[in-house]
Length: 122
Image (cartoon, rainbow, N blue to C red):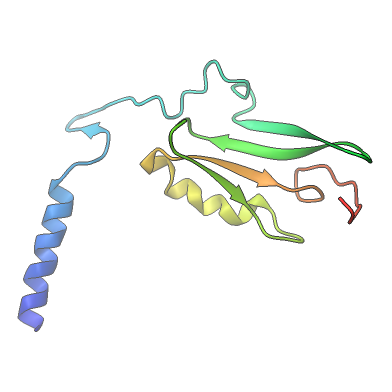
């Protein structure tokens, strides 16, 4: 079994490394527009928006941050709670951009960068 496994692994490694599915060409890089924020409302803030939420107790703002630009493939990252923040999803920065998946961090009310009305009914 040991002799069968090594050639199969080498074949799989060669197959995956020989097929170039990324946007890069040999010796040059192809631009895709994935990080092109020009013309978007959050261009000057690096993708950050403080979204107003109207409630019977007033208007509050929740923190969102958009990473990437892909209208056909988006993910909204919603943390758990109470006490959770968008920080638990920061490791996605190492994976989703390579696949050109647009994703949005979100902090609910009373969490991290969002407003903190300190009202459990909200």
